[in-house]
Amino acid sequence: MSTPENNELAPLTANQLAHIRNSGIWDSGTTVSADAAQLAEAVIATLAGTTEETLLPADLQELVLQVKAKSIIGFPRITADDGVRLSAFSLRLKGDGPHPVVIVPAGWTPFGWVLFPGLYLKLALRGYHVLAYTPRGIGQTFEIPGGGFIDAPFTSGGTVDVAGPLDWADGSTVIDYAQQHFEPSRIAFLGESYGSGISQLVAAHDPAARVDAVVALSTWGDLAGALLGNGTRHVAAVDALVKFTGGPKEKKFDQATQDLLKDFHDGEHLEEVFAWAQERSPLSYVDQTNARGIPTFYSNTWHETLFPVNGAVETFERLTGPKHLNLWIGDHAAPEGAGLSLPGPNVPVDEALAWLDHHVLGTANEVPTWEPVRSQVMFEPTLRESAASWSDVTTSTEKLYLGGSNGDQDGTLGTTPAAGWTASFTTGELTEAKAVDELLKTGQQEWQGNPKSYITGKFDRSHLATWISPAGARRVRGVPVLHVTVTPAAQKATLVAYLFDLAPDGTARIITHEPYTLTDATAGQAVEVTWRLQAAAYDVADGHKVMLVINAKDALYSDDNPELATLALGSTAGGEAYLDLPLG
Image (cartoon, rainbow, N blue to C red):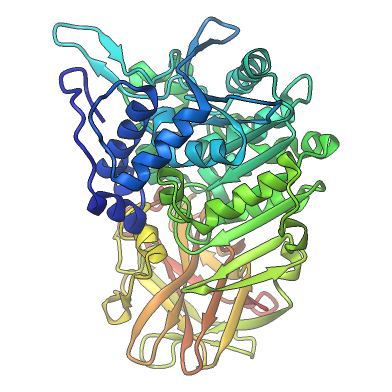
């Protein structure tokens, strides 16, 4: 994306478009692909007529000019109730109306509303006005030599409210603008990531209940759980997001939010942090959403590292209006990213738009025949399964009891309760058993058909414990539950549990994982702990085994263990350790 010192646009090549289509919008971690940024700027410049050069390959150039011919392009600044000016982009359809409008709050990226030109083109061609805006505080802010700052054109004023009440009010102000300037027949919100949470929250809180439908991609339902699930701080995700607003933290967040982020980082005043996040959780307002009967489309990924899937599933299950849930292989924005950037085929985006067409345009399409839940199975991209509800995904449970060592350093997962054993390891070290190699990027590779392969022989048993089931095919469907006795070395203790598909050659692929932190324990005193791992849909092949690994440190999470202490796991009579494996 251009800076104030370098605003020249270069033509895009077909190879660059192919790279976006095949690799998505992320280059590394939370770094936006340079090709995706260049594409966005080129499409907007072509629509706006600010370039005489042909910047796009011929077929895309023609499509953009087609949208330009049928739309009036605008770049309004919408003034919020407190005077903050929101950067926006609009496509107002010409000709007979009225038409519905789709309002698109941008995701949490330095590029604000600019990043999804493919979506805007698709919406306009389907018969929607488009009004996209950057939430307050989001967008590139450049430091000026000699002092001061300057914002990019797509950057909104103010400071980031993290989907708080100011963002809800801003959403209603944007609706006011849409009604005044577009006179829409109906109003929908469509958001990805940050924008998806804002979309749900505006729909629940708009004083006049004007939102007719919501599409929420790579979404969250429970922000408190995403930040502090099972007492464990999701530090890698928060650190990455804080750096991804487009400017320095001191410029992007007010002092109260900076203080709260510091408390989160330091592990202090976490009750206040949790309450702050609950206020920003669609789950907290599900009754309001239900009372309004808002049709809601959810999309999430199995290995989501920003907004873990369980929170989205729980919120979805509590919705009573028209609803649909798609679950995909990969991580945050991997399935839909390319489809938001480019106007070509993309199943996750195409299904979201078909849902919107049915509920907003009134299109007679296949949407009424869909089951409410549709899940892609790891790692078989062509295999998708449907269910009448999330609870119907799991049809039975296999209870596997954790047993002691079988002589080769691994414990057992069997059908007989086993008590009296202890498995101990040393805390404080990262191990080869980990959720991902890199935030977002590992999941992007899963979506591309290249899931990470683990070499279990490299799992250092001095820093983790393992249990292995008998071989056999299993259709894992739902939320695994783990119960084990823990003897911590201090008042706090962090554990991370992982389920792997173990192949006969000793390699493995991850099925799911989840951390848990004891926060009020007594050093040396055993305590029974039960926690839910993240949901999964995974087929374990015949001849493969399920491997359970528990360690004490993962780069995604806070580590509340004493350094190089001994953490003991065990199983007590009457409270035997077990793994409930959901099957379907």
